[in-house]
Length: 468
Image 1: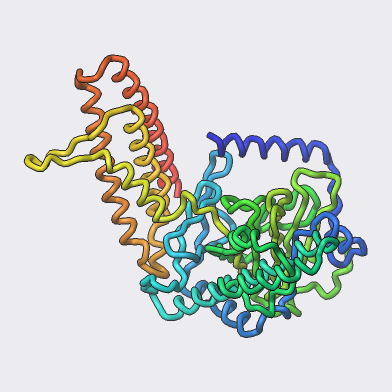
Image 2: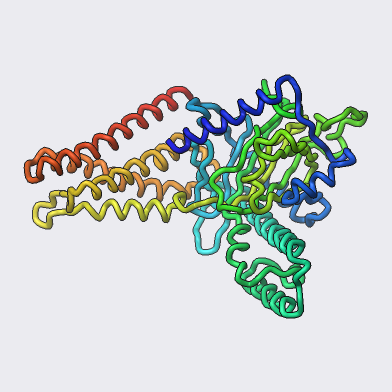
């Protein structure tokens, strides 16, 4: 319900903005415009852009080879997402790679990580090439983490440059040592001070736990949406805020267009606005018609960082060029409800209410209190609709890379079967006359609400399945 209310609110804002614009278009700037750098500094200061020559050449090679390997093995898939109550396939193909057991949810679709190599975790990849591709992406992840920490330190230094003194310099050295010991980055990279007390917050907001890889060949697309507010041209990804992230966390995006960078640009392009042959990232202040937007070209190996609250206060889109393009979008996903550890914990909590008679081996519920029954049935729904159906609906895509998820999903299915039994036991209990009428009515009302929701969701999933 909360999600639907949010979608309605966004639609109303979009409608109001388009009405205010009428037939006109908002202005936007590219790096070729004289006022671009001033606008970026004053209204988009938390966007940090780095050209490809700042990244080690060896890392470029590893990552770009990894992209091509994953495409060669058919590991990129279009996602079926739900927008305004309707199902759509994304124009961009994706794969999620990250910490083992992590998931990431966007537009009502939960993606499951192909785990990157992790110490202490046994991962059987389908080929050594896929292993190498995942290893390259965790190396890129580590590199971008370091760059994000440095960028946030630099931002902090700018904000506090008037108050630095000798005592702060001493504490700066302590903080640099702390970061080095914790493995964030080497001592010679920590050139500016952040209070030691802020270390945990800074590290949490830059410790990427997954990357969502994107791939699209624009020339293979029958149709691409036109950017509606500025007239920026073809969009690969519409205006949005990234979802389900740790609050104020940094997003890092590495871009790789398949064509040689010299061939990407339209050599005689001298019109106002962006070159349509080149991929760009577009940015705007959310729901604002006063501030010009930005369109920044993305060439091979460039990356950018969206620091702090930029993802909340601004929106971004991806503007298609002519050549195929990969990107690796590194995020600090909010996994409070999105890890195997979490959902297994929920299952264990629910199953505490199930007991077995040692003599007859008959199953029964320990408690039929409404609050206990409600908690169990809510977890039952969560396991079925947030995990099992999400995983199996996406078919065997993950087997292209690894079979890592099969065992935990089999374990979840076993938990779900036990919860199905618990639902039957709860229905049997409310037929008995051991409860007062008031207690029975309360339990029945609770069950009816949750079982009605379960049936509605099952019908929705069936319709989605048949629609594909």
